[in-house]
Image 1 (spheres, rainbow, N blue to C red):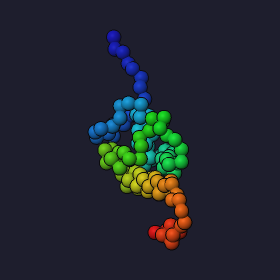
Image 2: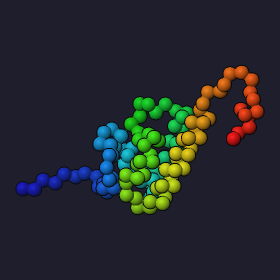
Image 3: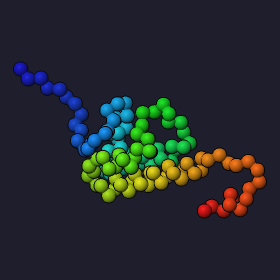
Image 4: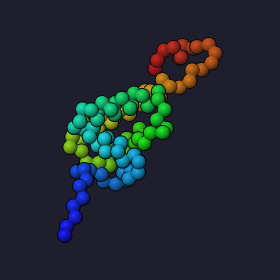
Amino acid sequence: MTAVAHAPLRLVTCRQGCPADSRRAHHDRLLRVDRDPDALLELVELAVTWHELDYSHETLVPPSEWSGFVERHDWERPDRAGAAFMLALDIVHRGAHRARPARSGPATMFDVVPG
């Protein structure tokens, strides 16, 4: 007698060091960024809100791991995946710049003129 276990089909694209923990679901959604517009939009939304919302209780692959994430996986469209994550990281870094607390005291020309 042969037993068959039904499981969702998952393409093996990981090369090494991928989470097998609670972040696995987010990991798998990120793997669709190069071919699924909804996954791409979700990545950009996460990047835009990373410094605005509290994600400490969420099981996400954080932006600090996105560069390595791109390198550790085989992509259907590597150019699109790389560009998507680079854009998302740029958005996160810009958000970090905006999220810095304002200095107290009078403003100087360096505070007013973006550089």
